[in-house]
Picture 1 (cartoon, rainbow, N blue to C red):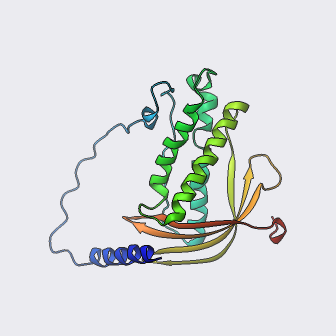
Picture 2: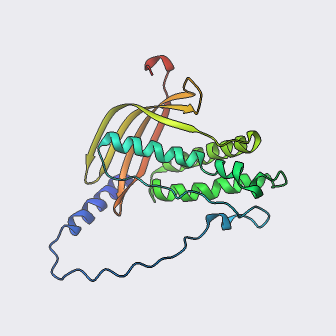
Picture 3: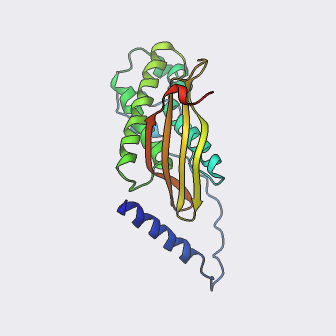
Length: 221
């Protein structure tokens, strides 16, 4: 918690400084420059396919506590399902000769992409465990997609926002989440999430996250 306090105090100071009156006019806005974003698949080993595309990861925006909770779950869904459609549509990935390690390598690349827009730099130890868990889930979905020939459709739905608060230093969320797979009538799991979001730059990131299972009978859906 000392680390959290230090980060939040630093963010508050940065916010205060940014609110000072400007004594000089803003510099002119530079003309936009078009650049091709580097293909993250090029980070894969040489014996893995480098064709295909991964959708850009989306971070958290502004909004109410409920909107932040829904956006966070949507970002996690995008992460855990990332790459599965590519494995079923891209010829080089569909090829059965692709080495098995390429899926694990792909999950690591996807993890770096999505953690970079969702998980705080310098977050507390819970964020490292969260990142490892989501990378493992994404790898399982990639393996299933390759074996079954269809993309994964895992979703986490916001059932109840039990508590939520916002301040310039970030946000606190306590929510009940159900995890479902596309086409399945009942949830795979119901969880309680406790999350602290902290600002870094103009965006909020997950600084602390705890998840625990909730007995199915505790909530209705």
